[in-house]
Length: 192
Image (cartoon, rainbow, N blue to C red):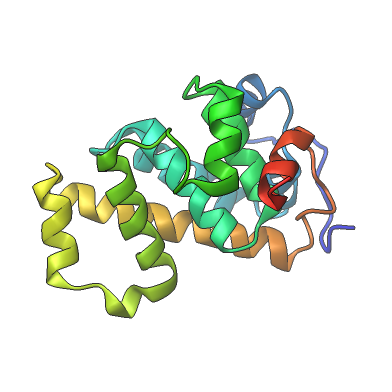
């Protein structure tokens, strides 16, 4: 059971309501983590605006950002978030379910990430768990892939954004007890 109320009421803020409706169109539902965040609607609106900028104004393709979300969430043990990224990778990035399943189960053995994406994912995971070990060489390697400082900043903020959602869902009991994504993503998370 979630540790906070899952808000079912429609937001009174028109802009926030439109954002929630866009999420409903992509995901087919309003996921429970958004219902938990609706306890602080002003912050949810700011977070969604930040996510929109992060996903649409940087240098990385949406697919790459969503893959970062999937691998960071798996590393952080957030089954709920892995379900979100599996859903977004298939619906928003239009990737095949089997490809996404393999990516979530073991991205290093998957054929899905390109070599460029693999290097970005490795950097993202290092930022997630060993940020103190980031070196000038790590950043230069990203620039050799064609990223500018903006792209590097986008990756670091994406990791922080996704890790924050992992912590939010785990700390407030939204994951995995309130699993409102397809069971395939749970199987991928557990390596079944």
